[in-house]
Length: 478
Image 1 (cartoon, rainbow, N blue to C red):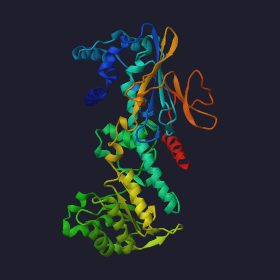
Image 2: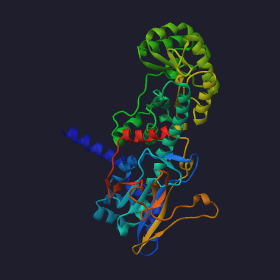
Image 3: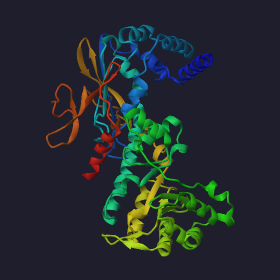
Image 4: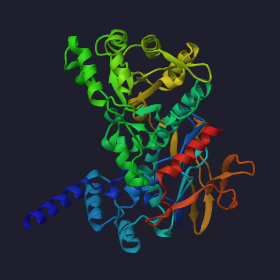
């Protein structure tokens, strides 16, 4: 019993150490802002939007997870004490009375109301995706104070958008060269867990990719989708070799290493992937897979996925598929394109939107179906993007002074692209279904495309992953 109590105390300390002080989840200069607004200010309203960047639309995702992680944690007097002491050392003022009001009047929860478009929607740049407004006139400044935390939604939005764009490209080639789209959910596999900056990034980014696909090797994404979106298992994977499990056998025994994979994992209907370029991918494909192990592959009833991992992707994938076709043969599908028998290819090196398009274009010109190849994307999917990829920003657009709302916006003469919206702006759709911007005062209930998802510490909408996936997938049909 004593050991159990000690263990519980230890775990409590560990959990406390891992918990972020909500007050310190902000930028330093925010600590001085509460006195910088006009006298009589009693309300604030801000919005989140993409201002441009690499795409005309972005796929909205990740706010629900962020709200559960960040805003559901209550502020305590201990948090206030810690933040006040740190602010003093840091050289900044501290609004102790304001934070104590949050604890005493609002039970430790930020007094804000948050509206958002539905996750999984494809939103034009310039249209608000999230709005946040204050609900306590004395604490209006918390809207701006939360900017740092809330704007991190840029990351899952950016990953989901890149993944969606990849899906559009792959789908286009499948429509041209394949009999159906049944393989589409597994055509882009997440290889990015080791290429991101933190475990949290692999959770959030990996989960954002799974809005569009169902293949991943990022286990953290499965955990996140369970915790935040009630999805029992958001993705699937298959047994696969890495270079170490092949090169450990030595170069003369590379064929034995491949055979070992077949012995352990090749069963009727099964899939397994084997990296085959540890030494000479063309020798491995033609001599080892195509001759020595050919009958073993066929007799196993499995589909063996060959993975090249170096060289110029377009050229290598095309030559590997040509050599596999010579060894295993192909079947002509209903659209007149060749599909490999018994084997497939997955390319996981040098994969980005441009190379996916180029590889599939080359294969189509050679008469091969896009069914023959899948892709793995790592840092390009989860890490090689930033807030400026889609120019994401959270901007104050209105304040209330003495109970009267007034528009607030920026309009820098040196950069018109940074002009922000004014008023209590919302996302709306017109009678033709076109997205646009309106205001709370003018928009009709029928046109308003934003729902209150969070208010004063309560999550008011808790969607499941399947609903969001279906919403995103619907945009591919247009």
